[in-house]
Amino acid sequence: MKVATKAYGIIEVDERQKITFSQGLFGFESCKDYVLLDAEQQPFYWLQSLDSKDVAFVLINPFQFRSDYEVDIDNEEMAEIGVSDPEKVLIFAIVTIPLAGGPMTCNLQGPLIINRDTRCGRQVVLTNPRWRIKHDVLAELGAAGRESLC
Image 1 (cartoon, rainbow, N blue to C red):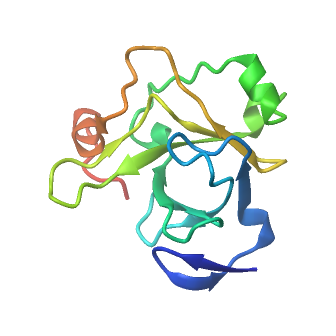
Image 2 (image 1 turned 90 degrees about the vertical axis):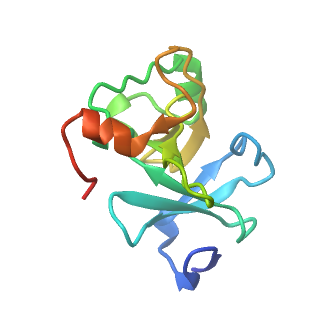
Image 3 (image 1 turned 60 degrees about the vertical axis):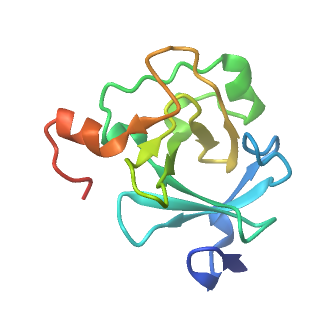
């Protein structure tokens, strides 16, 4: 299918890249359908809305820079997207890259959980105070002894 994207213009994507968030994402509840795309710079991904080409998010697998990341998700929330096996889940954090400089951060408090089989997802809120909405990605990489994401 052809998709109008914020980052790449109009591109052809496989139907299997489509992810549905029946409740939308926080602040973007009206956008339900997205496609998951590899970004040009790894290990990042794009989550592009199919409802509005101007709505797109940069994502990262949080385990890539926080090996100690823990996602304690309510069974009810998992059931809402049809997950019975935790191995069938993809987890992403939304990345913020400020236009005016400043650190690149990601939201570890509100990860995106996606069922690999059904391609249904939802954004959850973790209650552990250790995970905040603004984690400095590069600083945490440095603290972990890694110099780059690639």
